[in-house]
Length: 139
Image: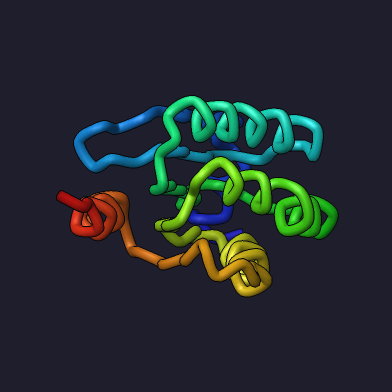
């Protein structure tokens, strides 16, 4: 294993979710490896924040997120993303994972988003993603 791969597997599992009114966006920062049950529970929390804030912008930092399994990829596309769109998400800014297999998984999920109400963009870091979303702010 290379040092980047080792780092991902050794990180504690965490999904931090917060609303940043200065952008505005709901920001989720994932790290480590999640079981399917834990992954879906964390996403339920993200959905609750999206519904509560009615924020159209979602920033997902999956830099240190290890892997989204095939069943969870399908669940995201079939269940979670449609609910997020119904909650009002229109712009999703994703910070790309460094772990190759999760990068492929994230891109597969994003490519399957067929609802034109939501646009997905990729960024190298959170600051760039925030700046992009901030630029979408309407006056």
